[in-house]
Image (spheres, helix red, strand yellow):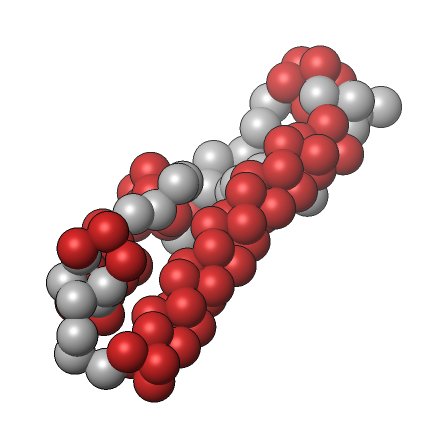
Length: 97
């Protein structure tokens, strides 16, 4: 992600972003579903004997498909402190002369 300005690494960066977007959209769907359940059945027992809204809230907080990808940003160094790639590496990435 930090070297995303290099043409060869642009596609992997975009793939990571799309995967994170999928996870975010699923979380949004889960939240809206939980809210709908709260409006429709309130605090009653849900489908299949679940605890209804409480079960869905727990699932919302617990289930992420790409949780590890979202946590990667915790390990990134500041972009300004990023080591400069060598000329050889830039060539290998298709960026150098």
